Image 1: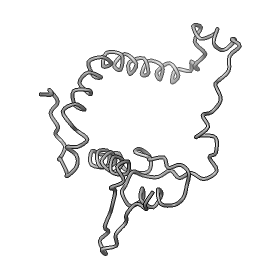
Image 2 (image 1 turned 30 degrees about the vertical axis):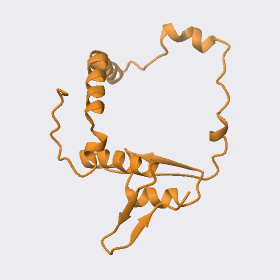
Image 3 (image 1 turned 135 degrees about the horizontal axis):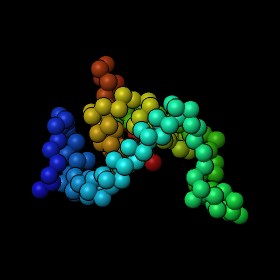
Image 4 (image 1 turned 120 degrees about the horizontal axis):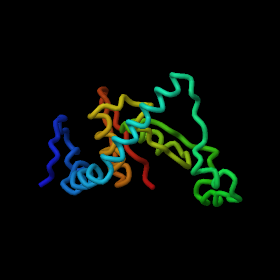
Length: 152
């Protein structure tokens, strides 16, 4: 059993996202990267204090060979080359259904700027993404209007 204690309210569907396997994965990530995370946060604060003192950032010496090197990025994958019609929006059921039914070639779910990134919105967003992938996403508003994904 995972040593993680979930203190947020568990809503319907959350158990499909916060599975035992997912929680065990989070524990492993924490064990592997928490030390690095803490060090980076300390370094970030040190850098912030240096900038406040008037010392502007510079390029790292250890990356000089990269900057001076003769390299190039691989071409964009075929499925990302045509971006004439894409939609970015919150991972809320109604918005996702409308976006996915719109005919846009690409939908990018936003779990940060377009919604308040609180416990419910973050986990419900994952529930909605999973349901969209499984083509089971649906929503009924307060006026009993139903939203469903188109066939396809």
